[in-house]
Image 1 (cartoon, rainbow, N blue to C red):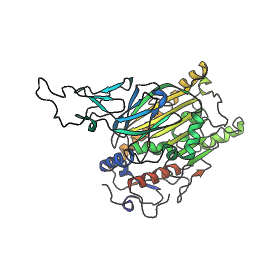
Image 2: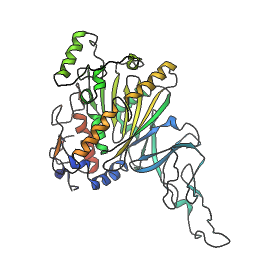
Image 3: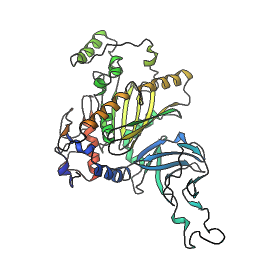
Image 4: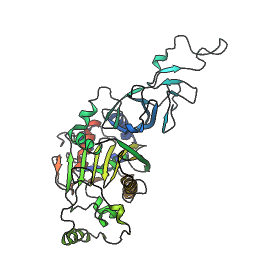
Length: 426
């Protein structure tokens, strides 16, 4: 059902109406892989601390394309498509490792770390018979090399060798916030992976949805980690595709009257916010590390990256599409090299907020799969995205009761896909 023009797609030029078929159409999904993930974007692929030494490598994906990211002899980062130039097999199947060459298991074609084809078994045949023609040029059959750049330890890859620099792509908003969280040498504490049976764009909407946390995630509300009554807001970059959602503690939170007023907001909407208690409140403790008072924020980078602080749990997320109705999330939990043992333990413990069984993230996966099921065969109806107002897509908003970052995502999406309607809001 792929439409030919943006005017055919969008019922509202300010992206306040999102047709459900955008989350299910197979032809559209194939174009997304080409125009977004293999197009003019920078895709997050991990932290460079994962591959600190010469020969270290990790395997991952950009869209559905398997890639290898490795560390060269001079400390440089190298990104290659993980697909043999011979018959197309994946050259590397491990998640991490250390090698000085890459050798395909199928016919043992061997490549340098830079992707050059350096060895072919039976190249000249056996006993003068068979083998490759004398005109075969090994230089033409190496692994496809991609462009890779790193900012403050976060690695990004693009297929577009003419793409603007990662520095410019991130813009001032994300350079500032990444520098805040990557302020000193980090240490990876662990990984979690999760498969969610929904469209990848539903995840991008979910993480840009500023107020569902206080309604869907009862853990947040029950223990006061995130309430819409707390100070906070949203910020978007100039492209509108990157967004930043933040929450600050209420300076009057210790006031019983304030807490009661906050509870009344939820009670009036039928939210049970006081039904359980924690016996061990250490889990909710907070160790102040930064000059500001932010304790919870989530930054979204178009198209596939997120980085987050949740109390003292620090993490990045890499989203990998697996078809029009499935995607994978890779969570990387980290701390700082100079963390005390107690702080490192607290970070690991607070990682229970996130991941497939997380006190919070579990519910996001459930609702995304619920949505994908509900509109699987819908071709006409649309989602309503009006919280925070309609019209121009604001870059700054001083409250969290808005869906403006979602409309910003769709604005950036439409431009990259060549589906921007005439007179669209940006």
